[in-house]
Length: 406
Image (cartoon, rainbow, N blue to C red; front, side):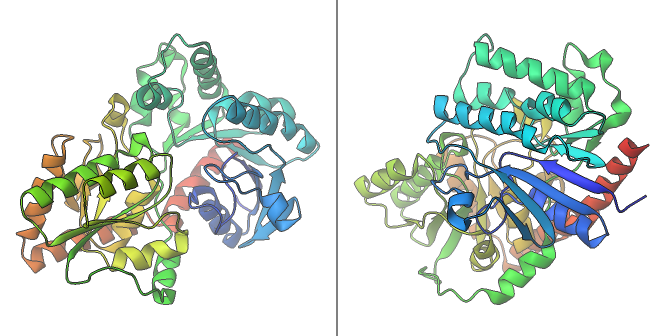
């Protein structure tokens, strides 16, 4: 098999460097290298920004790394309220403009999109890829009730997608466990369920590292710990600031935190740092994917922080985790995930409790390790990144494509 025309439909799959979640772009450029034709359909608006790609580039389509992008004009929004729902609904309805197209396989990247994809692209095999368990994550992180009308609709859309898709991919390793816990579990054909983690593009990471020329404003005599990612309630970056305060209280001056990212908690945390006189925490705002390898290469360790919630038992699949692993630096994680690669392959430390004191204890543990022990943790992480390199993951994706083509 091969040479098929693959369409990937994802609201949030805009091309680099404007987007840092590159799962579908990485799939696309690897598939193109193997002779497939790949088109990604995405919204013109980029989440958590005021950027509209059509306005910025002056066109509704583009080609990047051999992958064709088609953009649907959607209204800008702020936050997660009615404006965002309107944006999502317009994206769904405007898929109709492509209904005369005839790809061989469709990859649908949000369960709520499935009925629209199936309606506008009749008789085409559909693979539904799940990287976030909506609506479970909304309930867990945003404290919505399961009886909320919107949540009930999302549950129904999820059920429909999981039952009727020709194949299912979960980025989290325990996705199949989630399915087995559902009331409709007996109706699922488990032969059609696959796992493909986020992974990383090691060749791109290494190229970005070679090209990295920035002079970072860090004190390189300190033990620098880096966080790269969103700064929202779910990410619990507040714990980093609280840990910094606790380190100060204990008189530990050798550690500094370098925080890269943006989100609705950024200004709140900046104020916390200022009010508490914390000179060991530094914020740098939004960053580009190309900067990450160089930033992480200069760090002594990296931080993965999240609010501990029930759905973590199914595993995690964060893009930043694989960036961290690829950097060859130890990782400190504040959440107990199921199927945890950090614990499984001894790439760092996972704290037992979500308290700043637990972070401090983990940091002090690293400070007391020998250079050889630190290097071994980093080396373990790099080997895990190699196991989840994009060519290996796309081998698995091609198996799914072949499965639905049969």
